[in-house]
Image (cartoon, rainbow over the protein chains, first blue to last red):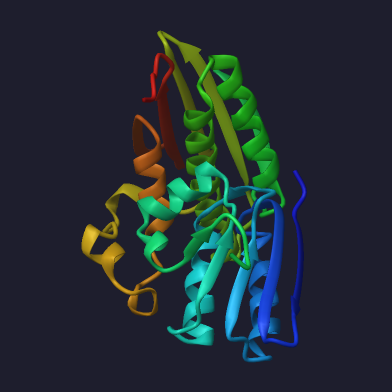
Amino acid sequence: MSFSISSDVDAQKVATITLAGELDSLSSREFQSAIEHVAAENPKELVLRVEDLSFMSSAGLRVLIFSKQKMGTNLPIFMVKPQSAIVDTLEKTGLQHSVNIVDEYPA
Amino acid sequence: MESKTFPGTLDSLDLIRQHVKELSQQAGLDKKSTYNLMLAADEIATNIILYGYEQAGQTGSIDVLSEIADNQLKVVFEDEAKPFDPTARDLPTEDDFNKPLEERTIGGMGIFLTINGVDKFSYEYANNRNRNIFIMNVDHVHP
């Protein structure tokens, strides 16, 4: 299955990245580039729209950690509607404490 | 055993996952076990490709052998990179996972997810080949 990604930072400095398909070691390079791209605008929040993301390996987890390290600990990260298998991976690795899993954004 | 060969490049990850998904479906694994095996396969294949081949400046392939018997799906990845035993490395612990993100080390998560996601994972080195072996029990009932 193919991977697609888009990103933008709005006037309120909310960075939104929409990910769809399968996030593996190959596609995580595009995810990392998108993070670097939005980080340059010093966003105050990072919103990841992942409803259509069907697979995420540890390469995706590493980019999540990278984004926190790159943009600062205090940057809130919202993950909108992750699929249950992905929530499972976040929980197994303790990452659910570092991201806010939400059904919609803004709430 | 059935066998299928994939080039040892990151482009193959998608195809390897698809192949493992088909095998899981043939074996009758449920959705969650299928995902966990696909994840484990992806993590091990990534290590073989990035560290076994690319970092060593070597090219090679990954043979995916499979067998469904006795209510088990057995999948074996064989590669000709230098010996690497994923089970020999230190896995992250509960303590690591409770650390704030910015203090965490990022190694070992893939192997952790692999071992955690399959019923049995083992490694052997034979005939100059790494053999990573995944076993899933078919009669799994998840609550």
